[in-house]
Length: 114
Length: 113
Image 1 (cartoon, rainbow over the protein chains, first blue to last red):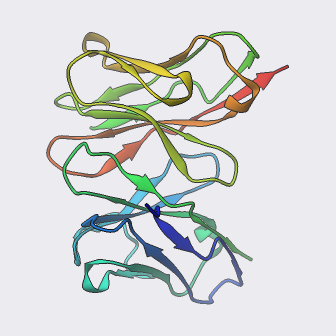
Image 2: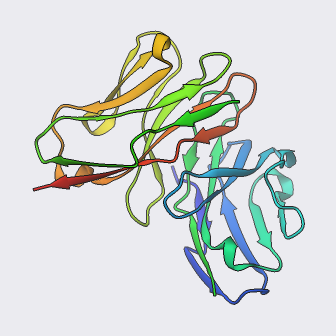
């Protein structure tokens, strides 16, 4: 079974430029998460999808971040415009949606804003 | 407020020595509990999880964790550490009323030869 696939693995952009990250969850997992992990810290939840509906986006900086999950499968996280403080690893995870099932994480996208 | 605390930012142990990483949580009810490991540049790998039942949980790579309700703790242990265990370890919780996983700040493990 393929795991959670994320691309790209690495991205370097100049500040004020846009950037997008893509996530393909495990087949059949209806819940999808985006996390941000700053250097030396634990991951922090940005947004959670149940199928195609964003059910928890309270931690998503909506002035510059946006996300979508078309058809309840793949998801894209976008930042526009990027700021220096956005440099981090962006992790995608998916689960069957039942509390406590645990998640499967992708390898992440390491974003560097210069 | 709900929180997950890993008191130790960095731990160094000698290869072959025993290991214990601490995790404390503050939730209204006992949440689901997890330990993940992250090697440099890699994603998060699940070591073990606790939902209910036996308070001593066995995981992969020889790790185990013990849930102690009275102490709100879920400490990770390994009897004999290998050099390949050097990594960042994260304790995480999921509460009963939602699916959101919250992480501690992590403990970085260094293994001395």
